Image (cartoon, rainbow, N blue to C red; front, side):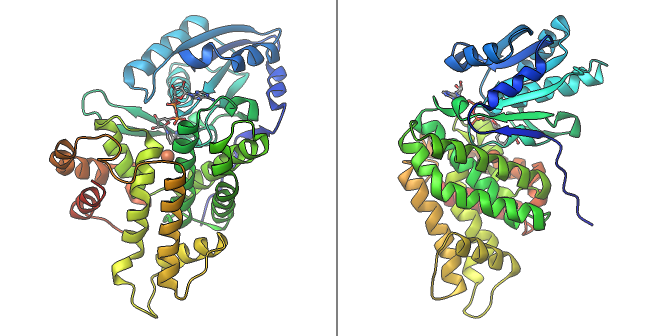
Length: 376
Ligand SMILES: NC(=O)c1ccc[n+]([C@@H]2O[C@H](COP(=O)([O-])OP(=O)(O)OC[C@H]3O[C@@H](n4cnc5c(N)ncnc54)[C@H](O)[C@@H]3O)[C@@H](O)[C@H]2O)c1
Ligand SMILES: [Fe+2]
């Protein structure tokens, strides 16, 4: 038996911010970060919320930790909102999700709903029951999971992503690509998640580079935004894999954006999962066959299935290059010796990560350490 759940109502496309009129007259706590609190988007959000009593908690930090969540919860309990509204990338959305969960545990239900306005096109957090919170002691990124954290409403308005600078479009876009590819081969993949993952990948193929090159390309930014959410719905229902386990482990110890790390890891993980070195002519594993299907859906062609898997690897590397993203950990600015010294701990942390159980191939600490060495 499979389970495919659709909980979040989506409003998308130009002018979808007007859906906020549903909250007119309500007490609304906005959870956001300092940059977005002062942005033109926030002016539009306030206008769309006209008639609401608004409190803004704007002290969210990138890669939120336990203390950031506790501070958000204190703001929630002090204001007692009827609705919670997260405005931002994965960091404000994940903070709001954890606040929502803890407030519920304390008996406070913001009964008018949990709304989110993603301002990056990548994490999928607007449609998932996951929140990533950093443990300040171990530095591990902890993926929390609860259906209580699923947003009731997500508003995908292109105005929310129009100010995103190219590097943020690149990092988020590579995160969305990783979600689509990992979801497509994950243990829990199913017909519905497959359809969304495949479509999300094709949308990234068409619109990501255009979004990167110009924030005036509204069509590209609109579709890259909806595509990233599709990838989020896909992985919410299929699970992810070791690109994310390794990315969470590295991201907890070294300051590199999540999507940038995914872009470094993804080609190597595809080769590992496909057993690239083990693919002999005429012999192909089920996982490799799924990568072949993805490669074909991108319009790639090659003389053999093996070459199609390598074609998919090459496609990721080409997109990464055109997005001007680093190909190795060292190129991402991490000291190589410090990284090599950390590999044993990182490999153990990644093995225990929630996403590892979704990977289509069983992995050992030695496998994960080898991949880490490979990407250094
Ligand atoms: N919940 C999930 O399922 C999930 C999935 C993937 C990643 N994550 C988490 O999400 C976080 C990363 O989120 P993110 O990459 O969306 O970025 P972010 O929320 O951390 O924001 C990064 C920076 O970009 C700025 N920014 C955001 N939107 C902008 C815009 N439209 N214009 C200009 N600047 C903008 C922010 O102010 C911030 O300075 C990490 O903590 C990661 O672990 C969660
Ligand atoms: Fe991700």
